[in-house]
Length: 167
Image 1 (tube, rainbow, N blue to C red):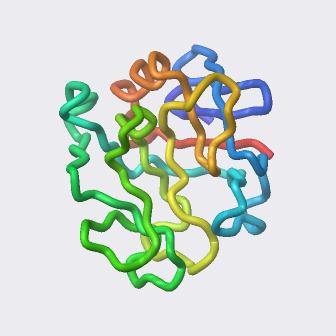
Image 2 (cartoon, helix red, strand yellow):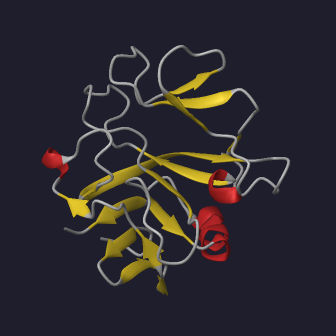
């Protein structure tokens, strides 16, 4: 572990010498081999940050490598889809999640390499780092922070930053 890693423990997260409150999936943290699509669990392990998405209509670009979320952007969560666990666009006939939400939860998203880029069907999709719904509210399997904390973390991420989730 290095100071550039976001380390998630049962008591919160650490990054760059600071501590943050965060939430994980409603299914708790599970061993990576036990993670399944739709279980609401957060997979333990070391995950690389492979992308950053943001809503340009709601906030400035948080890092020079961040990509804008457009009105047609979706994330495939259907294990039957050849594009499972990848960003796709409208129209998309398989089950998916909209990345451009009415609420602010996905205004800023860090994408991890969980089951990516060659997804194993059913092993789980889209372990993101994003804004929480409210303090203490669990996610569907992602890691979530307050808006203020996420906006502090995002521009300080480097290409070496990893999300390390303890069991």
